[in-house]
Every structure is written in structure tokens, then in C-alpha cells.
Length: 173
Image 1: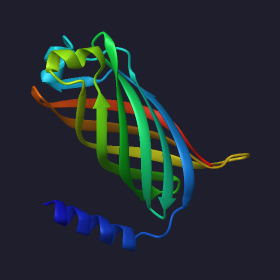
Image 2 (image 1 turned 90 degrees about the vertical axis):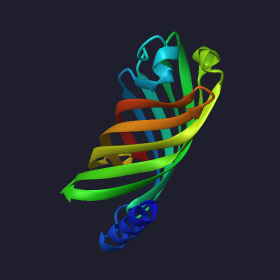
Image 3 (image 1 turned 135 degrees about the vertical axis):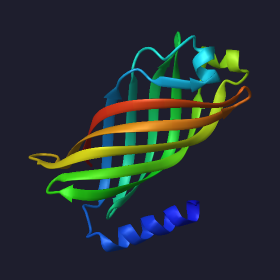
């Protein structure tokens, strides 16, 4: 299954015309996380306090490699995640595009992690999103984006998940 997805992504990348390449910084803010599994029970319900994501990326045509830091509400505390992701963008029409993001993350669970028997969790994250690219007068390339992401993490208490929605802005550097 994973092999098929990689082959499809490679073919799609090869057939799509080249997009802007270069470095960018991205900042996003979103709503409260939807917690799943034992994480929901440990945090006494869903997260509180929204989420934020800061990413640095390097584009190579339609593909980009990103490193990110993010935070989201987790019960009475905040969880912090650090990750590395591959992002594939596909044009839709004009300046509109869609993208998928897949990567690995480490999450520090804060005080709520004690209830799970783990203060950290490792796992995968996937996201789908839409973006609108524009040219900023002084900044060059920029994009307004919105995405839904899903983290699947392993803890001592079992597998847990976090779903986030985020809106943001990316600017070329």
C-alpha cells in the first residue's frame, strides 16, 4: 500500500509542471484539537486553547521538505510537537492549489502525559489542505492556506490521536 502511494506521488510529481522553488516560512493558528483514544480520557475531554504551527520549508518544484514546531491545548496544559514532513502541492486552477503533507513527529505531552505513563509520544502525521498563492510586493511568493491534520502517536497507554484544523500564511525567504 505504501509502495503504491509513493509510486503515485512520484508519477504525479513528474507529470506536473514546475512550481516555485525556494525557502519559505509558514505560520498557522487554529482551533481546539480533537483528541482520540486514551489521550482524550487522560486530558478529561478535548483539548483547550487552540493550536499553532511554525514551519520552515525548502521547495523543490511541487515537493517541499518542512521542519515544524507546533503547540496545541491538552487538558490543563499544552503539548509541543516537532516534526519533519514531505509536502506535495498540486495546482487546481489559477492560483488555487491542494496539497498533502506526510511526516514524522515527536510530541511532548506536558503534565497530561503523566496520566498516560509517557511524557513523550512518537508517530506519524498526515494533512490535506488548500492554498491560494499570491505575489506579495516586498516579500515575493506567499500563500494563504488552510488544512486539516491528523497525528497518530504511540504511548505506553496505547495508540492515541490528535486532529487539528489550522489556517495560515506562508512567505518566501
